[in-house]
Image 1: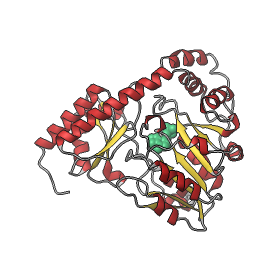
Image 2: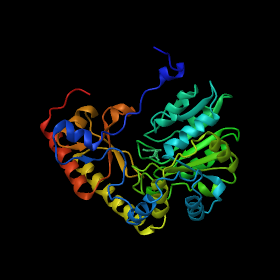
Image 3: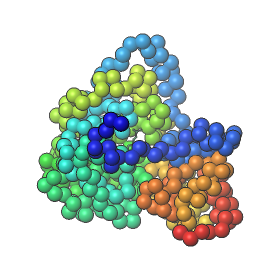
Image 4: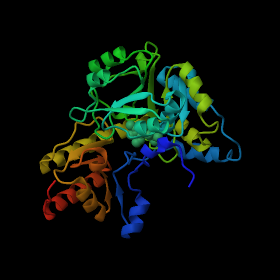
Length: 368
Ligand SMILES: Cc1ncc(COP(=O)(O)O)c(C=O)c1O
């Protein structure tokens, strides 16, 4: 066997939410409800269909390598310059471009102990060292993260709101943190769930970007815009960093349909606001259900919620699977008795709560 790069020994493959098709095949179920990957259950903007149809006519042609029309629209919306934007095949790709461009063998990257796993994986692939800082009640411990900085630190990740816990870091604390991170360290703030955050304690980082040229903001069209299947996300950062990432990215990293869909989505404020409203209602519904079942949960600012089912998560996950409901078990994420549930349609939330209740009543509790 030809040995791969030694760095890969420490890397494991991404473990995604179970796909609907897979569960259908395995259990022969007609109806499957997926509440596992923080997708948008309310769909995507009606403008997308037409935009994609029109773009289909251009499929024989390569896309443009910088997506200028989309860039212009998004820059106007965010009130930034187009040269501060870079689009990726999902924000996943931007994370990879950042580590590819900046992490040298032995460089350290500070992150929370339970956060989006692609930070760690990409740092490891480049031969860097992830420094995972213990969290406090499912929330980043920013002062501990500052203390974890050494002369080898090259990068820091703050996922805000955090996946999988759904929590945010407090406004003043994050502002202080941004100010205290030394300017030679890249500070990556992943805001994949930005649009869902409605707390007064959520910090708007975008206006700070010009003051902190080492800061990078990541956002995506996969979540609130409902375009996870098309793969498109973006980063906002100093033009000099964009220039470096552009050297590393595949030239045609985005497909034409994704770019057209994203641009059309930006026109539809109504869809966005409706999703926010319905998600908020769904949050309340699940929280009320958990309260009735006597279960605790992390306060969420996202379209998912992590609840403590007080028994091995894997057991409950399997029990729900047999009823055609896919959630994400916490044992894979460092929370062995918790489930991460994506907020679904009202009916899906109801079915999930009923299934959870039935399972916990009917199944004797094994030792945790
Ligand atoms: C915090 C966070 N960042 C980034 C991503 C990647 O999203 P995408 O590559 O679909 O833009 C996700 C997806 O679940 C996420 O939860």
